[in-house]
Amino acid sequence: MKTLEQIGAELQGYDPQALSAEAVGEFLARLVQPLDQHETIDLTDALDRVLANDIVSPLSVPPHDNSAMDGYAFDGAQLRAERPLELEVVGTALAGKAWQGTVGAGQCVKIMTGAIMPPGCDTVVPQEFTQPAAEGRVAVPPGLLRAGDNRRRKGEDLTEGLPALRRGERLTPAACGLVASLGIARVAVARRPRVAYFSTGDEILSLGQAPREGAVYDSNRYTVRGLLARLGCELIDLGVVRDEPVQLEAAFRRAAAEADAIITSGGVSVGEADYTKAMMRQLGDVAFWRIAMRPGRPMAVGRITQGERSAVLFGLPGNPVAVMVTFLAFVRPALLRMMGTRAEPPVLLKARSAEPMRKKPGRTEYQRGIVSTLADGSLQVRTTGNQGSGVLSSMVQANGLIVLHHAQGNIDAGDEVDVMMFDGVI
Ligand code: AMP
Ligand code: MG
Image (tube, rainbow, N blue to C red; front, side, top):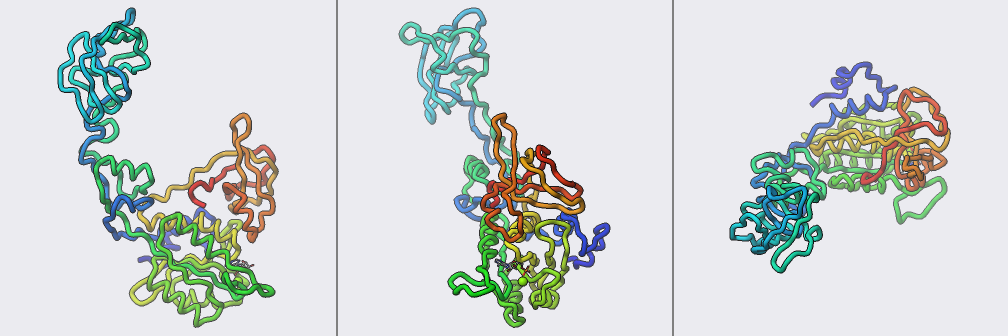
């Protein structure tokens, strides 16, 4: 396990007091390693888990050539461009009940979607394409079909012996269905990261406490909880911890003993006259960063150690929007990495800004945006208004973050900007 100093030395121009958002990502990719512990669970419980091994298809899907339509199966070599093809119906093939006979020239079999293609047949004319013909016969009009139409090939979805899904893949609803289509009921998945989280600050009230002057209710624990739950982490809620050495030490020690990662909020800014930073320093290897970004400038990162165990620490700022933005920008990719899945950079959409935005080059800014589709189909984005880092309602109104990159300057109305949508993340 590398120390923060070692990781810092690997990165060019690492300066904890002036870090670009990009450099933070690179640092965390070195600090956080996959957990590398597996368990085998029922597919029913596997949604959003991460595959620990490749899944190799034990069979082909579909297992036979079969019909994609309700209609009539026949040998497509008989089709002619200039005249209808009249066929005698010699039997019926049902899904799950194959036609056993042989189909000769001038013959066809009535076939249902999913039924095995009878031997000698490679083409299906859909029921609705056929034209009336004498009793027991159908006519296929010319020009509508080519040989091989409406036949699904054996193995066109998955091929026996080839990997259907790769290790590190997250089991989305589609992936769960794919695993089931292979007849596989149990899957080996990476252990879920256990994440302990607490809020710090003497002015922070827990729900149920009476309001008092100068105090605010703890919202961070609820946003963090939701963001962690969306990722499928195991949650250890350590509540609000007062800015007091004994309580802080107990919380950090317990978190390091039980969790893989610790997320705190508050108490990491420069002017902070409290014990949080001192306790982080005392119990682990922790760096205090000033990140060139807005919101979310101060952040503590490192490891807290308790006996043989250690947990990665993300000491997030206190401001509610800064908590969410730093989580999305840094903590989420790091936890995905811990889960053993690829933390691919989020897909950014391009939208035209409905308004000018002030932006200083030399830092990354995340503005809360509302993206909408204009009549011509193009995307437009406007901000939610007040972009204060404490204005949590802006995160509720927004459907994405406008990402104004490090080098970007002021934005004019009509300029294209990048947007990271919230879908499925928030
Ligand atoms: P700090 O980073 O501790 O200086 O806090 C910055 C701002 O965020 C202050 O206005 C705090 O009151 C506020 N804040 C800190 N923690 C929380 C929390 N858990 N819930 C809501 N607001 C918070
Ligand atoms: Mg504070």
